[in-house]
Amino acid sequence: MSALPLSPRLLGIICVFTGTFCFASKGILIKLAYQYGITATPLLTLRMLFALPFYAATALWLHKQQLTPLNKGDGWKIAGLGLLSYYASSLLDFMGLQYISAGLERLILYVYPTLVLLMLAYWKKEKITRNTQIALAIAYSGMLLVFVQDLRLTNDWNLTLLGASLVMLSTISFALFVVLAGDMISKVGASRFTSYAMLSACAGVLLHGATIGDLAELQQPNAVYLLALLLAFFCTVIPSFLMNKGISLIGSGKTAVLGSIGPVITLFLGALVLHEQITLAQLLGAGLVIGGVSLASKK
Image 1 (tube, helix red, strand yellow):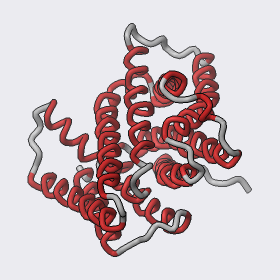
Image 2 (cartoon, rainbow, N blue to C red):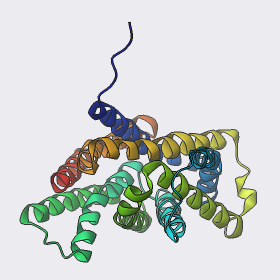
Image 3 (cartoon, rainbow, N blue to C red):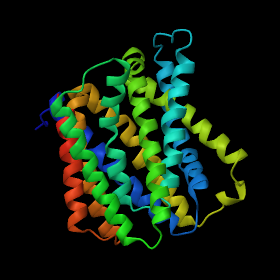
Image 4 (cartoon, helix red, strand yellow):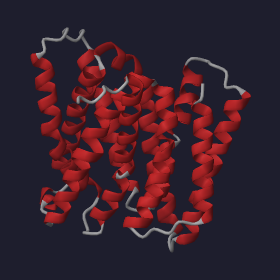
C-alpha cells in the first residue's frame, strides 16, 4: 500500500521545523569545537571548506538544467549578498560565540525579523503601527533580560558585552541581507540563489582564512573535523535549502512564526550538551523574545 503524498502545507511545515532545529544546533556545535582550543576564523574556514562541494555540486546540476541565463549584473549582486550573509554575518557570529552562551547568541540572532521591519520602514517610509512598536519593545526587553542574566553568570562582563555586540552586528548584517535578497530570490529561484550565494560566501571565507588567518591552525584533532563537518552539512547546507523551500511553500510570515521555537531548542540543547545553566530569567526572556517576534511577524 503506497503512502499518501504530503500536502504542500505539511511539507513546508516539516521543512521549516527541520531547518530550524538544524540552525538551532549550530551554536552548540561551535561551542563544542571551541573546547578544543580552535578559534573563530579556522573553524569557519573548515565549515565552509566542507560545505563547498555540496554547493558546487548543486550549482553544477542546476547549470545542466539549462535554466534561463542570469541578467547582466545579477551574478555580482548574488555574490555580494552571499558575502554579506554567510561570510560577514557568520564570521561575526563565530567570533561572538567565543564570549557568550549559545542561548544568548540564538536569542540575539532571532530578533532579525524585527530589524527587517525597521529597515523596511526606513527605506520604504512605512509607518510602524502601535502594535508593532509594542511587539518590538517586548522582543528587545526579553533579549536584554537574558543579556543581563549572562552578565550575572560571568566573571568578565566586558567579554560578554563584546560577544553580544559581535552577534548583534551579525544579526544586523543578516537582516540587511534578508531585505536586499528578497527580490533577487524571487527573480532567479531559491535553489539557484542559495547555491550561487553560498559559493560566493565559501570563496570569501576561504580567502579570508588563507590571507588573514594562519593555515597551520587548520590542523586540528579529528573531533574538530567531525564537528566542522556536522556544521557544514547539518547546520549550513541542509537548513539553507530547507528554509528556502519552506518559505516557498508556506510563506515568510508563517516561516518566521514557526521558527520561533529555535531559541528554546538552543537553550535546552545548551543545558543538555554544554551544561549551560537555564534560569527562570532566561526562560522568561526567551518567551518575551519569541512572543514579540511572533507578534511583529503576524501580519
